[in-house]
Length: 258
Image (cartoon, rainbow, N blue to C red; front, side, top):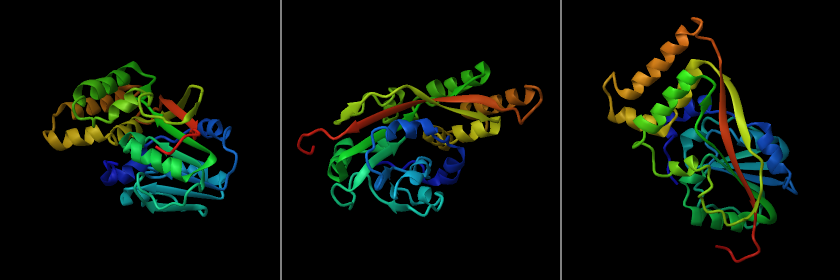
């Protein structure tokens, strides 16, 4: 499992979007018991917070101590620095295991062995992710797509292609349950939008390697800020933002552990 976000942990916690309740509702259609859940690759706890009100106990793990320092204290949540592929959890102890916007960094085979070992026989496994941001403004969307597809093209980690393909190409050795299409919706000021873009691992990598003040990425971000400023001369103007969500839900197959 890669750790690309430790030194962005505070910004990540502030700038990343929150998942809608509809995602939780869809997953919970298939959860039978609510004793214990494992939120793996929890980061700064965006998804953990949604699970906590429904379970007796939630264990949230991440390899980044810096990320876990940003999580809120919740009475029934235990935060642990732990590797997704090698945990010390008891066998068959979880009613639900979730991974939100993180599974593309995992060693699939080793992690799925842990899922098969620690999930209860009637438990549920859910993978959640979201794709490229969509702004309801042609000028800003054009800037984002140029940044993503052209300027940062060679700076994304190879695992990013799993997100581009909506997690449809990740291994999924489970009895899969069909899900409906969903989206996250936000209203963001231009500074919130740019803060979010600055959490992109590829942008961070690009800026480290291209330190000149007029590099392409900085030009695009400045162009976005200037455009927003000229729009009604209102820096507080909020733009409609949408993220496509991909959700895969499964149950254990009655077969030997991987």
